[in-house]
Image (cartoon, rainbow, N blue to C red; front, side, top):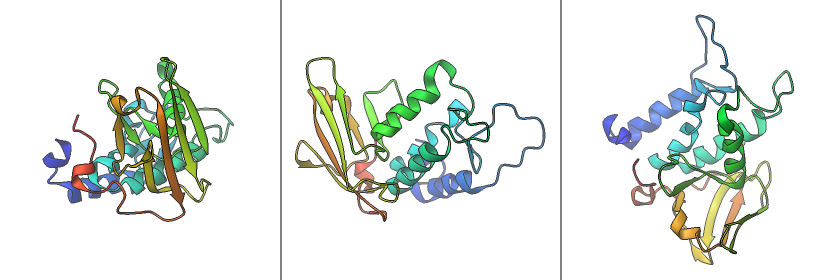
Length: 197
């Protein structure tokens, strides 16, 4: 809906690019405004889903790059050595980290859909609470290899930058092939976009 409101994917991407690239120059006192990438503020919870919006607009490689940047630069690395950019209102900033480090995030937590970013770990096992496990494996993963080249879920090709809880409710295995350069074809087709909120 928001993409349509601004005139389509191309205009939406221009606005996102501008948001992440326009320098933040406050004109007054701005408390709890830390963890900045352009106008984006990881320390302010209403911004925290925005890096994932590129998945909706057909450029998931930009989400992958931004997520890795936020994970590496914004947590435990400020000038005071604090763990969080900003504050951790009711666990939102720490849960963003945990989800994003596993490779996905609940952009709309009222829906059953998870939006894919870039897994930080080579392998993660999530116990689903029903005796089943979800394994997330990132092959060739490294600081430079932050871009998804291809993916499979339970051995089947996965070309969408999102998945539903129903896809993983009984466990399974996600495998992401990672690389140093964006694969602009993976997850970028209009019909691959996550469902609209």
